[in-house]
Length: 256
Image 1 (cartoon, rainbow, N blue to C red):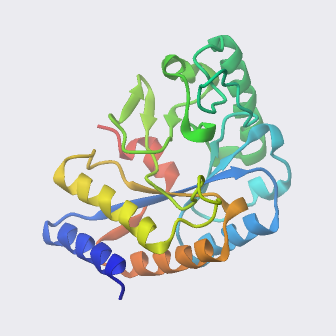
Image 2 (image 1 turned 180 degrees about the horizontal axis):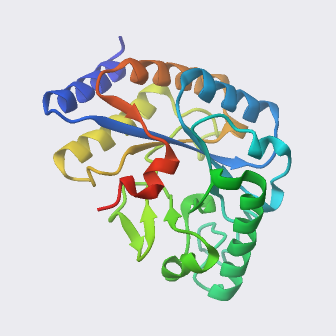
């Protein structure tokens, strides 16, 4: 066992020794249509028996596959068109602060309607904004577009991003976006997971927020796929570890 895997095992043991269970959840971004990489992802989820939350881009979504997902699969709304409207030196975002809220809300409502038509009850009414960014001023108005949840990246500050909006984030991104877009590496991925677990255990991060795995099936290399296989295999057999279904989480399971 490598040092990174041993460190992860040690952290899971600390949770058990404290009489606490570890909760993970899994979000995958940028789904639009059935392609080989997505089919591989869905097969992995089924084989591993790990619930999967697919963040789907509504404008580009097509195909009957959205209504034929296996048990434990949910649909989140990945913005509307995944086009950046940032200006100047602003970081990429589909929902910049300068955009009139009415325009953003109309786009989101249209996306919510399309995902609901394609995915039925699997479409949860949860926004996973492209690039994990959304104007703060827009958050309290998300219910106007039929949205009741939010998922970004990094430890949340509060279970409620705004009144009526439950936030559950991801914390382990497997892609090295600024270094060739390949897998970040086994050691780095395990350290991200271990660090968030340790922060939760110590009360330095919200202990009620499950540790979220973030994947992007369209850009995975073989190393990323191999890591996912092993990570699911190892964590599924660890006592006291549970992979949570996004539908359960956003129904209120992680709310105060």
